[in-house]
Image 1 (tube, rainbow, N blue to C red):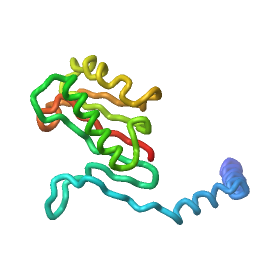
Image 2 (image 1 turned 120 degrees about the horizontal axis):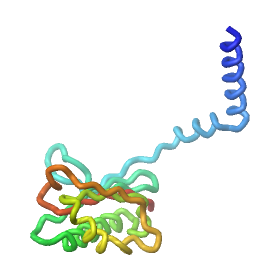
Image 3 (image 1 turned 90 degrees about the horizontal axis):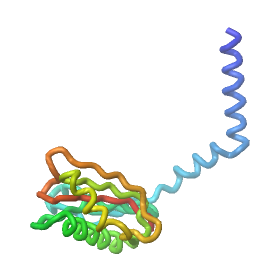
Length: 153
């Protein structure tokens, strides 16, 4: 019983400290002005699109996965994919230097070194964080690599 009283007292103390520090006020203010989502490059134009090529929310832009759907090696595919990402970023008001996160999906993990050779330096002197995985069953559309990213504007 004594433990329960101490726990309740501690909860009340932390709640009052949070109120004094203004934490509750900040949380409340953030919900009042939610930015509207902008959509760019709708893919698969039909009655109901499959997905957006890029969306923007506030000062953040999300670029959907880009692949290379032609004959070529990993270096040609990587170069093409990075150029496609850059086109979408520029269209949304951003750039390669403002990319925060990249996801790389490889058809075959043995292409990792070749992909890195082309990837290196494409995002400026401060590269984004990156996750790289080899996909089971390959990348859709016979691309050797697919990439998506998140950037700021």
